[in-house]
Length: 196
Image 1 (cartoon, rainbow, N blue to C red):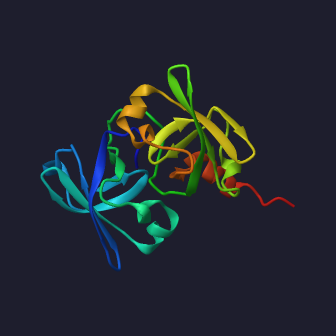
Image 2 (image 1 turned 90 degrees about the horizontal axis):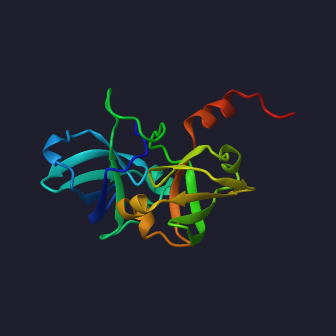
């Protein structure tokens, strides 16, 4: 489990495509403290660490992950938002994030707004009902507050600190990002009876 507070902006060093995709990611994390089998959120995707070396970690992605996320598009140089899994007693700064991507959101607009940047995203139609004004979403693993919703589009404001510390600083219209809806919204919808 994660909080959506990115603690390192890594970069893909190497991609090896086979039955699984092996990704080596450069990181500022102290990799000597990362155990094999640990979960790392990589741009919002919970992936398992299969190897570590000084300044880098390696993870693997299955066909299911490639089909549901942006991981299949990654190549050497791709910036990756990294967050280590939450430990009991850690500060809880964002919202509950599982690293289980629900779909892809597309950036439809990016514009300056005062000292921040306003992004407008388009969510898949089936996920739009789970996005609420003043609710939370995770985009490429970044915990964000939704400002407004109009049909399947929603807006968020990104402050300079977040722009400099995550891949949102380089994100442009047309780009897709990994979208995880709010955990509570997911389970409330599952518990409600089907509409007549």
